[in-house]
Amino acid sequence: MLNVDLHCHSTSSDGLLPSTEVARRAAGNGVDMLALTDHDELGGLAAARAVADELGMRFVNGVEVSIEWGGLQIHILGLGFDAENEALTAGLASIRSGRIDRAQRMSAELEKVGIDGCFDGAMRHAENPSLIGRSHFARYLVECGVCKDMRSVFESYIVPGRPGYVDHRWATLQDSVNWIVGAGGVAAVAHPGRYKLSRPELRRFLDEFKSTGGQAIEVVSGSHSLENVTYFSRLAREYGFMASRGSDFHGPGESLVDLGRLAPLPQGLTPVWEAF
Ligand code: AMP
Ligand code: MN
Ligand code: MN
Ligand code: MN
Image (tube, rainbow, N blue to C red; front, side):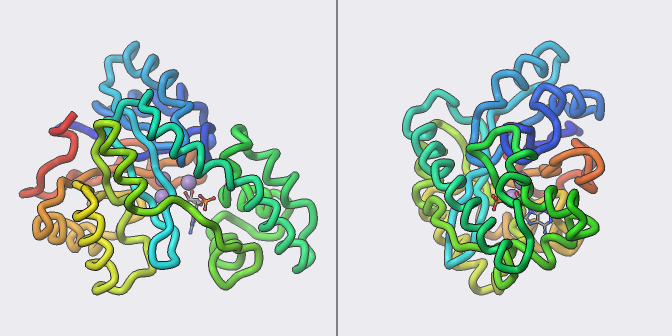
């Protein structure tokens, strides 16, 4: 059985390791096929691929596109696309362009509850400033002692209904799928178990995802429970979606699941990597 990991992050977005180190660590963990899927950014792919080639590990171009659907932030993975495709690269640039303004608004909201200096503090954690995001804010809030760890940041701050959260316009579902499929890739719903959607809402989302050209869902994920895996296996079969497997690794000490250290896909599913 191949060890495939099609979801992880580098310092090109909100991971802690450079993309070359992510590839090296994956190979060291016995990964046979890796996709680097930075948020809204393709900048780490070429260097990671060079390391993967050198180490004899298969490498698939990836990205995790931030979209808004039904008032929620949802993530769509793009896998196996042409990274030079202009509509895709322009689309991702358009998503990135709002992040600095959003970070300033987040910082202003945190100031209202007495936490100063968050914009500069978060920026110090962002290797790629155009990708400034909530993880960088979370690392700063831990660093300055406001919260004891990342988990408590995402319980008390920067999530809907809590200080520091601001609404933001991301891409639409249709745009994200068009960009990915138009560049020759496969669109997959990232960690479907993580969204605050009721079962009927989730089905409405998956119907729409499928009708726009989406073909896969993550079944085995670093953020899925066993119950999630069972449930999303069932939905993958029912909808005729290919199934993906990804750790969503962001960095040592921060992510519970390391690269490639995941359960295998359950039987009876079509692995998305058969397409690569
Ligand atoms: P952004 O794209 O700026 O909205 O940031 C989203 C990122 O925040 C995700 O990709 C995760 O890396 C991180 N994140 C969101 N929720 C949590 C959580 N509950 N625990 C840890 N990290 C989270
Ligand atoms: Mn992230
Ligand atoms: Mn995600
Ligand atoms: Mn991710």
